[in-house]
Image 1 (cartoon, helix red, strand yellow):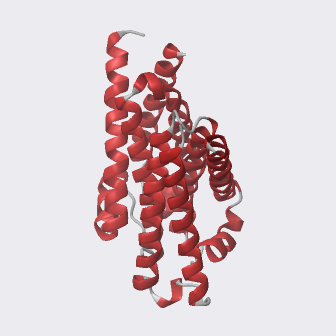
Image 2 (cartoon, chains in turn green, brown):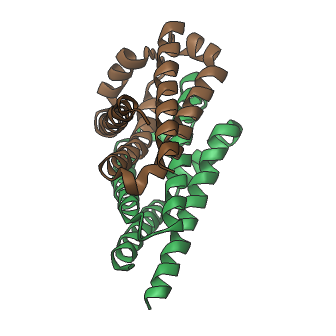
Length: 140
Length: 138
């Protein structure tokens, strides 16, 4: 049982790591894809102004390194349990963040998509965060 | 490792973590203030701010997470010192785009050469300290 949870947590952490590392690398080395990524993954109608072209650099770098930290945690979830908790905290913030974005973002910045899709996206982030927290707490 | 460099690394890591948590929190919760703060800190003078404020929020989330991890390393250096290598690499990437896109930084965000090089030197110092410290514990 403990072995299964250990493995499940590792697989989940690797998925989270690979997702963030890929998005981060694309943001740094393939800025042309930023508009597509923002629209597809974050429901954000991005227009590449000079300011946005710049801010994508630190954003992508931090996404990339969050992925690296999740990969480190995946290698030894017991040793790096606290880092997993930091990741869970980030996921919680992102859920709040997405809700705030939907409420306060000017009409033009929100991609016109089915609200159900928004709820599903928030739900997925919340479920991953909760799963990481529960498994990290149990794993020995 | 000489004691003075060890103390310098710990102080740098403390400031690095504080910086990320403070800038993360203001970016997430007070983006208008964050823009003023970055104007003072980095010399950024952006024209278009609506999208920028929306993008500062997710950046702030990640910055908070990095700051929290920084404090975890600081309080348990023996266990987590290897994390200093990714921190050094993060600073290296930040230097990389400051150098590669410096003309854009001067032209579009009105950052001066002095302001840019000041940040590069601060980040370079972090790379040296983090790498040196981590290698001394390997």
